[in-house]
Length: 287
Ligand SMILES: [Zn+2]
Image (tube, rainbow, N blue to C red; front, top):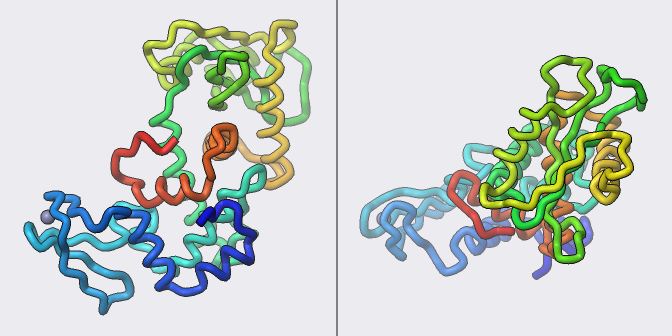
């Protein structure tokens, strides 16, 4: 089933019981049947008398719960609420807020915030595992208002570097937007070492073709990248009424995660649920 295309009501109705959610998670975690994380044996004794099934490897006796290694591990929140949260988070161009989530799944604001925070940690892992490759463009941008066309940075302006891999037609295929904190608070230019840090952390080391524009008013600036930064700003301002410096990076990562999957025509919910389930283990082929 293509869960990403379901409406909220359809999704809500499909995952109406904890048993449905448990079966869905088992199928997603072990699509080819149980595999012991310790010795890779394919058979386990299953205890089903608890809230969630517990698996004990029949060879090495290693015990693993359905939620081991997932972002849901240790949570007392019902699975159907977690799945609804991941579904709402997956909505392209929208996502969800802690306020909306707490109302829809009937949890406290604090719990909703924590759930979203956990989902964002799995996105951070996704971002770290996918450096930019091939032909790469980088352009500086600014998030925040008021727009201030002077040489000094306003405290509410935040410097960004927008990087993208390009296809043969020079169109962006995989985007990263990173918040750059200048060494001096009023510096409104991207320093060489900030650019070097971006390249080191977010571009594959073998990449040779990197085109970089860090001037804000040059005619060479790369408009498709600036347009994406503008879309990210609009989303953060309309959905969250603006984001402060402290959390800016995780919202930028969230925006890029969804837009990158959409560009690659990968269903967001299906990808995100795997990220959330395999949170603490190495996964590299989910893009
Ligand atoms: Zn085992």
